[in-house]
Image (cartoon, rainbow, N blue to C red; front, side, top):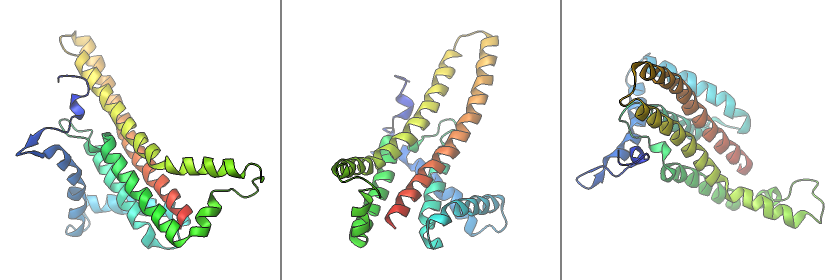
Length: 221
């Protein structure tokens, strides 16, 4: 590595094509077998995850068709986060360009739908119920800013958490070079514990991203 952040460099290319970004297609590897393998372990896991996520999201919507997008979004981020923990695998969700693209696309679509179909509701949402008349201009400004920064907070939260864990792995791995056996064993145990923590973070961050997106969508719908 030329520097600490070189493991996050997406510029390794083949025939002028950035093949590292193809790691996002691992999502398809996890999905496609579900359609032709009956009663497989992956289909059982998929059914358990989707049923749990649906139970969490259904109170916010009136129909199941609105939840499909957020179920797929959750699984897409989860697969990329978990596969990114494997050695020599590019983690696309650790890049702000990837997370910001997801968050900004969802936010723009929700804003367009809300302002076109529920204009009065969107205007009313800028002023919370019971706000004094004097504070109304300030509340409109505060609500507008909080609404605009939603895609930024969504993307930065996911990218920062994934990047931090990978940086810790790199730092611990570099400290084992030319070191004593006792220290190497201790660091290996620490890395195993950190791997368990990172696996939990991968699941939690995908759940948080999908849940917040669902909450933002429920405000618009």
